[in-house]
Length: 442
Image (cartoon, rainbow, N blue to C red; front, side):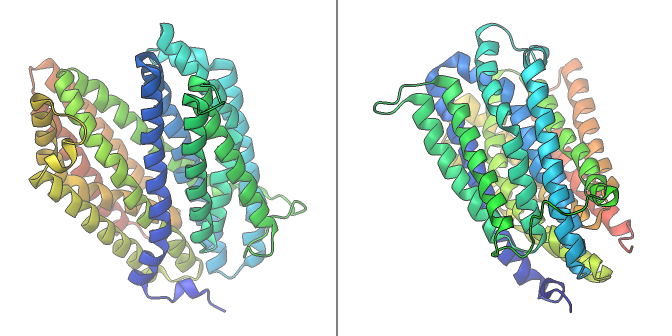
């Protein structure tokens, strides 16, 4: 008997699966903005400390949810598409053990070496102390983060998008409230500063991990977490071969952000502030693309599991075009009316001019970035990732090389924005070309 998701109309199904994911991912982005605001209320040094730790917190989320989570969803959905329910159920325990194991590695790593790591990133003095206060608590909860995202990915692989989205949305709401209460203080509860804000993060994700564990042990779930399932090297590799390659892409993304931020700083604080306003919008656009990509991932995996190669490619292209069209339209709006977004963050005319130039240059290229990112997720479902990873590598090299050359040759911030835009276009075009040329047949 064929899985219903291997025969359902493609575009309506993508929309139906993308909507709950979009709500959850947008909520997660808003939580990060709220958390930054809370830290800002504590002072400049806590804010500087948060700037040090945030890229690594973001990297952990990307690795657990997007990279290894994508590998889990891919393996489960391919088993479901082949109507191999026994294999799909066996993969649940393997996914949980991978999440548990990597989560423990993160906890031990930051418990033992956090000061060394953040000092190497430039942290010192009071800023480093504030960073460590947050990191020691937040990374103590790494097991909860990895288990949450691993188990949510299992559920998505079965075609159920509502349950993980609902769980993650509640997690976001709990984190927003607890981080505010524990970090800033409320009524009889004193302010615990950075420790309190990180505690809200830890408690929220611990609760979500327990919820997903309960769900996968209940009769409500299509798949079941069974602790007596035999372990198999092949099933671990089925997840890790996709999740491992995907992790390279996540590292490249974070590296690109760090490199661009460092290079933009060479052009002065106004240029950096204008770029920062632009990246705040992009931080909200990524969840839109993520929601389409995560919707495509199990559809591609199930289609390939059922040997429907043409349908898998059609899913990938349909989702990518839908995502590119929506995000591209938003980019065109801020290109024409940059003040709709920029005026929310600054009234400084020099900063607003820099932000306007950024949107004028980069805004029209948002669609290309969405195209590439959505196809990357679809490629996870196919287990064919080297093309998108190479496209991400080229983007990083282009931006880094161009930025360094401009810094050494009296370049301007406007020219740097053009390099960033070129990187987005190249990423989208190269990813599309590799997906078009790659044979997804197994």
